[in-house]
Length: 237
Image 1 (cartoon, rainbow, N blue to C red):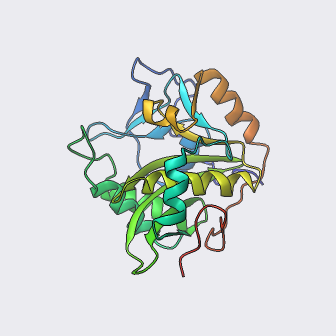
Image 2: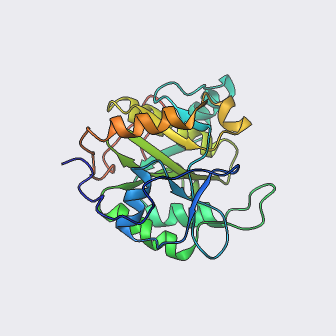
Image 3: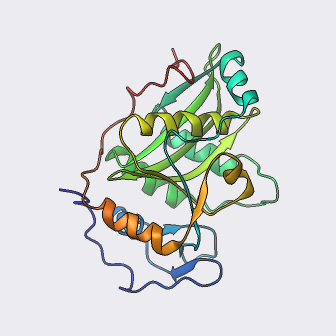
């Protein structure tokens, strides 16, 4: 049954975003609430102590298999001595997304409670990570995590410790999801960086329509540990 876990009713029936995309404040980070949020086009993000939930207009999305790959990125994939793994270290990927310094940001929205909640979703096959490692010593150098429902992958956060490692994680995710018939990678908020990688900004109404249509598809809630994208990066040995 598609979205069998979506049993919570934590949000009002009508969600109207403000100028920043905020639609609701409050609630808890339970598995049921998070599932309800994503299957309604909503996600938790930055804000105060009370949990802020967003549904921005426009919405950034990337078509799986259609990431714009620069020649320099393809060269790095071939010669940088990197490898990829899926779902090898989900918690570690979230923690590194939370703790890796970012330009123009002094804090993170990825709280300990959020890490615990998403790790529960990972154990249920709902949340997943794509991880980039140095091939020689298996040190993690980049990655991303997100959630899947139906044929949508909702990207949450990325990090990199070496140049282009997060881009390589996104490329690996894009190719792996395309091979399995996914429709969109939800990138949430449009940025110049995402647009340079091939993402597009679509109206919130169009995105919500795709979320409703997506509800008819059964979800692939299982481990990604066996996934491979040999044409992008070799698997971690």
